[in-house]
Length: 362
Image (tube, rainbow, N blue to C red; front, top):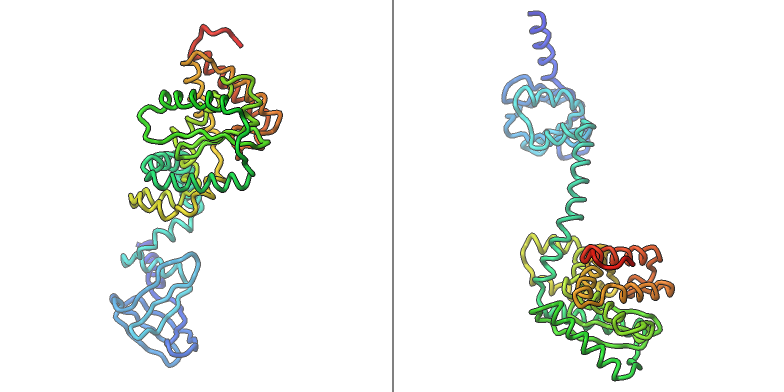
Protein backbone atom coordinates (compact mmCIF):
# COMPACT_ATOMS: atom_id res chain seq x y z
CA UNK A 1 0.00 0.00 0.00
CA UNK A 2 2.82 2.39 0.89
CA UNK A 3 4.50 1.59 -2.45
CA UNK A 4 1.27 2.41 -4.34
CA UNK A 5 0.89 5.74 -2.49
CA UNK A 6 4.52 6.60 -3.27
CA UNK A 7 4.08 5.88 -6.96
CA UNK A 8 0.87 7.92 -7.05
CA UNK A 9 2.55 10.92 -5.42
CA UNK A 10 5.51 10.66 -7.81
CA UNK A 11 3.21 10.58 -10.84
CA UNK A 12 1.27 13.57 -9.51
CA UNK A 13 4.44 15.59 -9.15
CA UNK A 14 5.39 14.78 -12.74
CA UNK A 15 2.09 16.32 -13.93
CA UNK A 16 3.43 19.79 -13.09
CA UNK A 17 6.51 21.11 -14.86
CA UNK A 18 8.23 24.44 -15.09
CA UNK A 19 8.27 26.25 -18.39
CA UNK A 20 8.96 29.52 -20.20
CA UNK A 21 6.09 31.29 -21.97
CA UNK A 22 6.52 33.29 -25.21
CA UNK A 23 3.45 35.15 -26.48
CA UNK A 24 4.46 34.84 -30.15
CA UNK A 25 4.44 38.63 -30.59
CA UNK A 26 7.40 39.82 -28.56
CA UNK A 27 10.63 38.19 -27.39
CA UNK A 28 9.64 38.53 -23.73
CA UNK A 29 10.08 35.31 -21.74
CA UNK A 30 7.87 34.64 -18.69
CA UNK A 31 8.46 31.84 -16.20
CA UNK A 32 5.32 29.74 -15.86
CA UNK A 33 4.06 26.56 -14.27
CA UNK A 34 2.46 24.02 -16.61
CA UNK A 35 -0.22 21.82 -15.05
CA UNK A 36 -0.79 18.56 -16.95
CA UNK A 37 -2.84 16.84 -14.28
CA UNK A 38 -6.26 17.67 -15.76
CA UNK A 39 -6.99 15.16 -18.58
CA UNK A 40 -7.37 16.80 -21.95
CA UNK A 41 -6.25 20.23 -20.83
CA UNK A 42 -3.06 22.30 -20.62
CA UNK A 43 -3.12 24.83 -17.78
CA UNK A 44 -0.50 27.58 -17.78
CA UNK A 45 0.05 29.86 -14.78
CA UNK A 46 2.51 32.71 -14.34
CA UNK A 47 2.93 36.45 -13.78
CA UNK A 48 -0.06 37.97 -15.53
CA UNK A 49 -0.81 34.72 -17.31
CA UNK A 50 -3.59 32.24 -16.64
CA UNK A 51 -4.55 30.10 -19.60
CA UNK A 52 -6.36 26.81 -20.05
CA UNK A 53 -6.06 25.22 -23.49
CA UNK A 54 -7.56 22.08 -24.96
CA UNK A 55 -4.61 19.71 -25.15
CA UNK A 56 -5.58 18.32 -28.55
CA UNK A 57 -5.21 21.80 -30.07
CA UNK A 58 -1.68 22.23 -28.72
CA UNK A 59 1.19 20.75 -30.70
CA UNK A 60 4.08 19.23 -28.72
CA UNK A 61 7.45 19.16 -30.49
CA UNK A 62 9.20 15.81 -30.90
CA UNK A 63 12.23 14.96 -28.74
CA UNK A 64 15.62 15.74 -30.24
CA UNK A 65 18.57 14.87 -28.01
CA UNK A 66 18.69 17.15 -24.97
CA UNK A 67 17.07 20.12 -26.70
CA UNK A 68 14.14 21.78 -24.94
CA UNK A 69 10.67 20.85 -26.19
CA UNK A 70 7.72 23.18 -26.54
CA UNK A 71 3.94 23.30 -26.73
CA UNK A 72 2.64 25.49 -29.54
CA UNK A 73 -0.72 27.00 -28.61
CA UNK A 74 -3.57 27.77 -31.06
CA UNK A 75 -2.63 31.49 -31.21
CA UNK A 76 1.02 30.51 -31.94
CA UNK A 77 2.16 31.39 -28.42
CA UNK A 78 4.68 28.89 -27.15
CA UNK A 79 5.61 27.24 -23.86
CA UNK A 80 9.13 25.86 -23.66
CA UNK A 81 9.79 22.87 -21.41
CA UNK A 82 13.32 21.98 -20.24
CA UNK A 83 12.34 19.26 -17.75
CA UNK A 84 12.52 16.53 -20.37
CA UNK A 85 12.38 13.60 -17.94
CA UNK A 86 9.11 14.73 -16.34
CA UNK A 87 7.60 15.48 -19.73
CA UNK A 88 8.62 12.08 -21.02
CA UNK A 89 7.12 10.36 -17.95
CA UNK A 90 3.86 12.25 -18.52
CA UNK A 91 3.77 11.18 -22.16
CA UNK A 92 4.34 7.59 -21.16
CA UNK A 93 1.64 7.63 -18.47
CA UNK A 94 -0.95 9.15 -20.81
CA UNK A 95 0.02 7.10 -23.89
CA UNK A 96 1.11 10.19 -25.81
CA UNK A 97 4.21 8.90 -27.60
CA UNK A 98 5.36 10.95 -30.60
CA UNK A 99 6.69 9.46 -33.80
CA UNK A 100 10.28 10.33 -32.89
CA UNK A 101 10.20 9.17 -29.29
CA UNK A 102 11.64 5.79 -30.22
CA UNK A 103 14.53 7.57 -31.99
CA UNK A 104 15.20 9.59 -28.86
CA UNK A 105 14.98 6.41 -26.79
CA UNK A 106 17.66 4.78 -28.95
CA UNK A 107 19.86 7.90 -29.08
CA UNK A 108 19.98 8.04 -25.29
CA UNK A 109 21.39 4.53 -24.98
CA UNK A 110 24.98 3.97 -26.12
CA UNK A 111 24.55 0.25 -26.67
CA UNK A 112 21.73 0.86 -29.13
CA UNK A 113 23.66 3.64 -30.85
CA UNK A 114 26.73 1.44 -31.26
CA UNK A 115 24.64 -1.50 -32.48
CA UNK A 116 22.84 0.58 -35.09
CA UNK A 117 26.12 2.22 -36.16
CA UNK A 118 27.71 -1.20 -36.64
CA UNK A 119 24.68 -2.37 -38.61
CA UNK A 120 24.76 0.75 -40.80
CA UNK A 121 28.48 0.34 -41.46
CA UNK A 122 28.00 -3.33 -42.38
CA UNK A 123 25.10 -2.37 -44.65
CA UNK A 124 27.17 0.27 -46.46
CA UNK A 125 30.09 -2.15 -46.88
CA UNK A 126 27.73 -4.82 -48.26
CA UNK A 127 26.36 -2.34 -50.80
CA UNK A 128 29.88 -1.32 -51.83
CA UNK A 129 31.18 -4.89 -52.13
CA UNK A 130 28.18 -6.66 -53.67
CA UNK A 131 25.34 -4.38 -54.74
CA UNK A 132 27.34 -1.73 -56.63
CA UNK A 133 29.39 -4.22 -58.71
CA UNK A 134 26.29 -6.23 -59.62
CA UNK A 135 24.34 -3.09 -60.45
CA UNK A 136 27.21 -1.68 -62.51
CA UNK A 137 27.50 -4.93 -64.47
CA UNK A 138 23.78 -5.03 -65.21
CA UNK A 139 23.69 -1.39 -66.23
CA UNK A 140 26.85 -1.57 -68.37
CA UNK A 141 25.28 -4.23 -70.60
CA UNK A 142 21.96 -2.35 -70.77
CA UNK A 143 23.62 0.86 -71.88
CA UNK A 144 22.66 2.17 -75.32
CA UNK A 145 25.46 1.51 -77.81
CA UNK A 146 25.33 5.15 -78.91
CA UNK A 147 26.41 6.29 -75.42
CA UNK A 148 29.38 3.90 -75.32
CA UNK A 149 30.35 4.82 -78.88
CA UNK A 150 30.28 8.56 -78.26
CA UNK A 151 32.09 8.30 -74.94
CA UNK A 152 34.77 6.01 -76.41
CA UNK A 153 35.39 8.28 -79.39
CA UNK A 154 35.77 11.37 -77.23
CA UNK A 155 37.96 9.47 -74.77
CA UNK A 156 40.21 8.34 -77.61
CA UNK A 157 40.56 11.92 -78.85
CA UNK A 158 41.56 13.05 -75.35
CA UNK A 159 44.11 10.23 -74.92
CA UNK A 160 45.69 10.82 -78.32
CA UNK A 161 46.09 14.50 -77.48
CA UNK A 162 47.23 13.99 -73.89
CA UNK A 163 49.78 11.22 -74.58
CA UNK A 164 50.79 12.66 -77.96
CA UNK A 165 50.06 9.49 -79.93
CA UNK A 166 51.37 9.56 -83.49
CA UNK A 167 50.68 7.41 -86.53
CA UNK A 168 52.25 3.97 -86.25
CA UNK A 169 55.62 3.39 -87.93
CA UNK A 170 55.45 -0.40 -87.80
CA UNK A 171 55.75 -2.18 -91.18
CA UNK A 172 52.34 -2.55 -92.78
CA UNK A 173 52.90 -6.30 -93.19
CA UNK A 174 53.47 -6.73 -89.46
CA UNK A 175 50.37 -4.71 -88.57
CA UNK A 176 48.28 -6.69 -91.06
CA UNK A 177 49.53 -10.00 -89.64
CA UNK A 178 48.70 -9.03 -86.05
CA UNK A 179 45.36 -7.52 -87.06
CA UNK A 180 44.34 -10.68 -88.90
CA UNK A 181 45.01 -12.83 -85.85
CA UNK A 182 43.30 -10.24 -83.64
CA UNK A 183 40.02 -10.47 -85.58
CA UNK A 184 40.12 -14.26 -85.39
CA UNK A 185 40.56 -13.97 -81.63
CA UNK A 186 37.57 -11.63 -81.39
CA UNK A 187 35.34 -14.09 -83.27
CA UNK A 188 36.39 -16.91 -80.97
CA UNK A 189 36.50 -15.02 -77.66
CA UNK A 190 33.39 -12.87 -78.10
CA UNK A 191 31.03 -14.95 -80.21
CA UNK A 192 27.84 -13.25 -81.35
CA UNK A 193 29.03 -9.79 -80.36
CA UNK A 194 27.48 -6.82 -82.14
CA UNK A 195 30.45 -4.63 -81.27
CA UNK A 196 32.68 -3.58 -84.14
CA UNK A 197 36.11 -4.40 -82.74
CA UNK A 198 38.99 -2.33 -84.13
CA UNK A 199 42.72 -2.63 -83.54
CA UNK A 200 44.68 0.60 -83.83
CA UNK A 201 48.48 1.00 -83.75
CA UNK A 202 50.13 4.20 -82.51
CA UNK A 203 53.68 5.46 -82.17
CA UNK A 204 54.48 6.35 -78.57
CA UNK A 205 57.53 5.76 -76.34
CA UNK A 206 55.36 4.13 -73.64
CA UNK A 207 54.81 0.36 -74.11
CA UNK A 208 51.08 0.36 -73.66
CA UNK A 209 47.77 -1.21 -74.68
CA UNK A 210 44.24 -0.29 -73.62
CA UNK A 211 40.63 -0.98 -74.56
CA UNK A 212 37.55 1.23 -74.85
CA UNK A 213 33.93 0.11 -74.28
CA UNK A 214 33.00 0.32 -77.97
CA UNK A 215 35.50 -2.42 -78.92
CA UNK A 216 38.37 -0.17 -79.92
CA UNK A 217 41.72 -1.56 -78.75
CA UNK A 218 44.91 0.44 -79.06
CA UNK A 219 48.50 -0.74 -78.85
CA UNK A 220 51.73 1.21 -79.17
CA UNK A 221 54.66 0.41 -81.43
CA UNK A 222 56.89 0.35 -78.34
CA UNK A 223 54.97 -2.58 -76.89
CA UNK A 224 55.03 -4.50 -80.17
CA UNK A 225 58.78 -3.91 -80.55
CA UNK A 226 59.37 -5.07 -76.97
CA UNK A 227 57.71 -8.41 -77.71
CA UNK A 228 59.94 -11.25 -78.86
CA UNK A 229 57.22 -12.66 -81.12
CA UNK A 230 53.59 -12.16 -82.16
CA UNK A 231 52.29 -14.54 -79.48
CA UNK A 232 53.40 -12.15 -76.75
CA UNK A 233 51.49 -9.32 -78.45
CA UNK A 234 48.44 -11.53 -78.95
CA UNK A 235 48.46 -12.42 -75.26
CA UNK A 236 48.14 -8.73 -74.41
CA UNK A 237 45.39 -8.31 -77.01
CA UNK A 238 43.49 -11.28 -75.55
CA UNK A 239 43.67 -9.54 -72.17
CA UNK A 240 42.20 -6.37 -73.69
CA UNK A 241 39.45 -8.29 -75.53
CA UNK A 242 38.26 -9.65 -72.18
CA UNK A 243 38.14 -6.08 -70.83
CA UNK A 244 35.79 -5.16 -73.70
CA UNK A 245 33.76 -8.38 -73.54
CA UNK A 246 33.09 -7.92 -69.82
CA UNK A 247 32.66 -4.12 -70.16
CA UNK A 248 35.21 -3.48 -67.41
CA UNK A 249 35.79 0.13 -68.44
CA UNK A 250 32.16 1.19 -68.21
CA UNK A 251 31.61 -0.87 -65.06
CA UNK A 252 34.54 0.90 -63.40
CA UNK A 253 33.05 4.28 -64.26
CA UNK A 254 29.61 3.27 -62.99
CA UNK A 255 30.96 1.83 -59.75
CA UNK A 256 32.89 5.04 -59.14
CA UNK A 257 29.67 6.98 -59.80
CA UNK A 258 27.80 5.26 -56.98
CA UNK A 259 25.13 7.95 -56.49
CA UNK A 260 24.24 8.01 -60.18
CA UNK A 261 24.26 4.22 -60.35
CA UNK A 262 21.94 3.79 -57.34
CA UNK A 263 19.52 6.38 -58.75
CA UNK A 264 19.39 4.62 -62.12
CA UNK A 265 18.86 1.22 -60.50
CA UNK A 266 16.04 2.56 -58.31
CA UNK A 267 14.24 4.37 -61.12
CA UNK A 268 15.01 1.84 -63.85
CA UNK A 269 15.59 4.73 -66.25
CA UNK A 270 18.53 3.48 -68.33
CA UNK A 271 17.97 6.31 -70.80
CA UNK A 272 19.17 8.75 -68.13
CA UNK A 273 22.68 7.60 -68.97
CA UNK A 274 22.58 10.12 -71.77
CA UNK A 275 22.52 12.78 -69.09
CA UNK A 276 26.03 11.92 -68.01
CA UNK A 277 27.30 11.52 -71.55
CA UNK A 278 29.40 14.67 -71.39
CA UNK A 279 31.20 13.44 -68.26
CA UNK A 280 31.87 9.90 -69.47
CA UNK A 281 34.98 10.63 -71.60
CA UNK A 282 36.88 12.24 -68.72
CA UNK A 283 35.73 9.52 -66.34
CA UNK A 284 36.79 6.76 -68.73
CA UNK A 285 40.19 8.34 -69.29
CA UNK A 286 40.83 8.65 -65.55
CA UNK A 287 39.23 5.41 -64.43
CA UNK A 288 41.47 2.43 -63.76
CA UNK A 289 40.48 -1.21 -63.62
CA UNK A 290 40.14 -2.83 -60.23
CA UNK A 291 42.37 -5.74 -59.23
CA UNK A 292 39.35 -7.99 -59.71
CA UNK A 293 38.86 -6.81 -63.30
CA UNK A 294 42.56 -7.23 -64.06
CA UNK A 295 42.48 -10.76 -62.70
CA UNK A 296 39.38 -11.58 -64.75
CA UNK A 297 41.05 -10.27 -67.89
CA UNK A 298 44.26 -12.20 -67.15
CA UNK A 299 42.43 -15.48 -66.60
CA UNK A 300 40.17 -14.93 -69.61
CA UNK A 301 43.23 -14.39 -71.79
CA UNK A 302 44.90 -17.44 -70.20
CA UNK A 303 41.92 -19.66 -71.01
CA UNK A 304 42.02 -18.64 -74.65
CA UNK A 305 45.80 -19.00 -74.97
CA UNK A 306 45.70 -22.46 -73.39
CA UNK A 307 42.85 -23.43 -75.72
CA UNK A 308 44.93 -22.34 -78.74
CA UNK A 309 47.89 -24.35 -77.44
CA UNK A 310 50.05 -21.30 -76.80
CA UNK A 311 50.10 -21.59 -73.02
CA UNK A 312 50.43 -18.53 -70.82
CA UNK A 313 54.21 -18.16 -71.18
CA UNK A 314 54.04 -15.51 -73.95
CA UNK A 315 51.89 -13.21 -71.81
CA UNK A 316 54.03 -13.83 -68.72
CA UNK A 317 57.21 -13.08 -70.64
CA UNK A 318 55.89 -9.76 -71.90
CA UNK A 319 54.64 -8.79 -68.44
CA UNK A 320 58.17 -9.32 -67.12
CA UNK A 321 59.59 -7.14 -69.88
CA UNK A 322 57.13 -4.36 -69.25
CA UNK A 323 57.55 -4.26 -65.49
CA UNK A 324 61.18 -3.00 -65.38
CA UNK A 325 60.06 -0.10 -67.54
CA UNK A 326 57.53 0.82 -64.84
CA UNK A 327 54.77 0.61 -67.44
CA UNK A 328 51.71 -1.58 -67.70
CA UNK A 329 49.04 -2.91 -69.98
CA UNK A 330 47.17 0.37 -69.68
CA UNK A 331 47.99 3.98 -68.94
CA UNK A 332 46.12 4.15 -65.64
CA UNK A 333 48.38 1.45 -64.17
CA UNK A 334 51.68 3.05 -65.08
CA UNK A 335 52.72 3.08 -61.43
CA UNK A 336 52.12 -0.65 -60.83
CA UNK A 337 54.87 -2.28 -58.77
CA UNK A 338 56.99 -5.32 -59.44
CA UNK A 339 55.35 -7.51 -56.76
CA UNK A 340 51.97 -6.89 -58.43
CA UNK A 341 53.34 -8.11 -61.76
CA UNK A 342 54.87 -11.17 -60.12
CA UNK A 343 51.55 -12.01 -58.49
CA UNK A 344 49.82 -11.78 -61.85
CA UNK A 345 52.40 -14.05 -63.44
CA UNK A 346 52.16 -16.54 -60.57
CA UNK A 347 48.36 -16.56 -60.89
CA UNK A 348 48.56 -17.17 -64.63
CA UNK A 349 50.95 -20.10 -64.21
CA UNK A 350 48.85 -21.61 -61.43
CA UNK A 351 45.73 -21.29 -63.58
CA UNK A 352 47.49 -23.09 -66.42
CA UNK A 353 48.57 -25.91 -64.12
CA UNK A 354 45.04 -26.33 -62.78
CA UNK A 355 43.62 -26.31 -66.29
CA UNK A 356 46.07 -29.00 -67.42
CA UNK A 357 47.80 -30.78 -64.50
CA UNK A 358 50.01 -32.68 -66.95
CA UNK A 359 51.78 -29.52 -68.01
CA UNK A 360 55.47 -29.44 -67.21
CA UNK A 361 56.21 -27.37 -64.13
CA UNK A 362 57.56 -23.99 -65.11
